[in-house]
Image 1 (cartoon, rainbow, N blue to C red):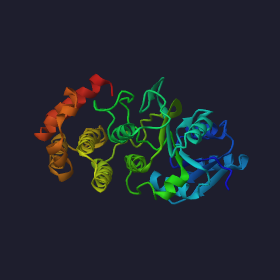
Image 2: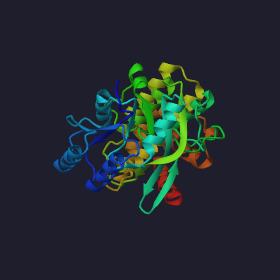
Image 3: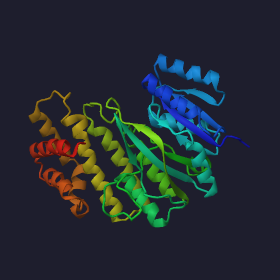
Image 4: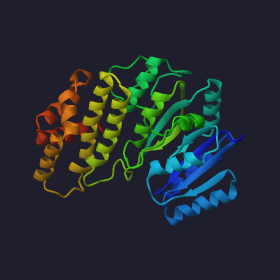
Length: 352
């Protein structure tokens, strides 16, 4: 029987050296010693590989795995396949965790016989941190309604339909969670290779749906760096396509599990919000040098496609604030010029 209590899986690709050292330092200095640290080299540059080898030489708990670059999903799957711990958790290579993270999470999970344990995150911006958590208090075992809220919030956090214990935050990220490894294998759960945005949402919505015992520990252990150079902020020509893959994955889940209308409403909202996010990534990104008229035309054509036209046709705006109803109205009427203007002003006013 394995003596490893927690397997920490860290996909490694392109990361700042200082951030990566911070990450490894935080994991290797955990108060819980009975862990293994699986570094999955997903085509990392030589300088980062050198750091991995350096740490592995000084800590026998570190295991190095290598694969041709295939993305974070494939790297996490590789790590899961090799893991020997009772529980599995994920840390991104540019983030870091509190010293007592794994010990507290492991004790909470075992004492409550949990399949999935969730805890809070600090979103780290230059000069400030923001608390990010799905619930306002510790819940040793989520009720059926709380689990339902969690699943809905995994798709879209900002809705006025959740219970009193809920916050306005979702919980779709891979990190800040502890999974019982046998639960993952027994349910054949794996990350969807080929989806490069919200792949963790597609994994977690399925994991939450299968799990019978989920708990939330109201502690803030995970430090999530908000980096402008990350995939979330980087210009991508045709960026809407990466969102479409994620949306099809969510739609497939809903159709296959017979969820009720509220789940579909949340999915339609996700379609709208992803379209708006694609404006940051592509259509209105300063690096996009296409003429504005051409970009607005491309937005209009995209809204005519089934994925988004279905969402705009079926979405019920009663679940949305007034400010969020405006872009839905503009999208429904293909008023892309006004949509671009509204979104630019809204971002400046909201500070997002």
